[in-house]
Length: 402
Image (cartoon, rainbow, N blue to C red; front, side):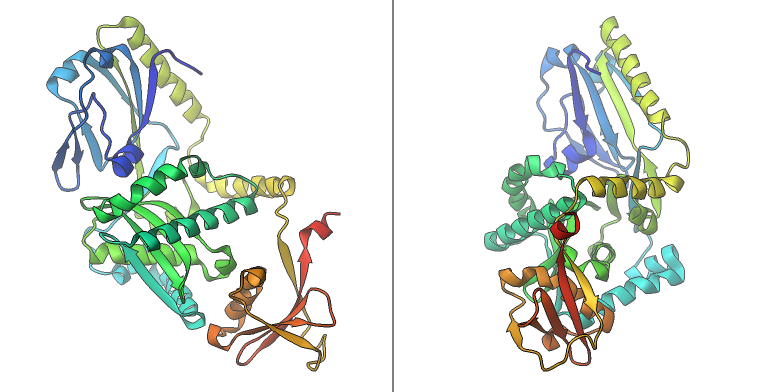
């Protein structure tokens, strides 16, 4: 549906990522602390009244303000849409992560701590926040890894990430934002290799989680849960009141967040232009009609529908990476010819997932791990830890779909 002179904005993203305000607003109020940021955007005069503006995704903790002069000249139609929700953690009153976990998850929170203990037992784990300073070399390295993680994950799903269209812009602008404490990078390292990377934006006491990705070879270790745990812990220690996960109804957001909020949307046009006012009203009905297709309590059936949809999508977009067939322990004699491999070499990178899975299953630490190629057998390998061994065969999916 296309309307003449229509201009669309995404408020929460424009403001937190770009500190961008619009010519028809005079400022933005942080409702959690009462501080008003005055707009630095120049008024484009009569052009404001000649267009229709749709401003989406206005969260309750950031309220745009309009001067009396503009308010008298412009027609504002605020509206909300069913199923258009945001998710955040309100940390007001919490002094440590344990207190929050106990209140939000109860005894289920013990699982998160077990994930962390298991990860730290198996690997040489280090957690680093880059907020206020990061070397250009580290910055470029982490952004390259973040891109790689996203690319690998979405190829696995058979889709392309929409962020890749604006990746160069992100790369060019984020370094200065980190230096100015308007953004941060959080990384979890295994030895010197990042396995989790998250880009966040900051405004006063608000921490907005924007882009997160992890190395899918470590998927069994629940890195997404550990990522959020560590970031909330950091927010509490650094006096951030809100940890915002933004729009999108996902199971993990409902698990972690103690506030589900509605986004406000606004259609803005000239008060003196009847055609614009009628068009603005039509836009509101149009957006609400789309939203009405989403039933109340849709999230209760959403996840099962999503799984079914993803299963069909996976069949259409087969990821032709290898799979690993675990072989019986007694399948091969131990005196077979074996060639020791270096798991850190890129040529052997496809073996990292079965090795990580082995470490997860048997709680084996990296320093004790050795991986061998069986000389007499094609695509058969042996992984050994301090107390356990496992034989496995690499099966390429290209062979499975023939």
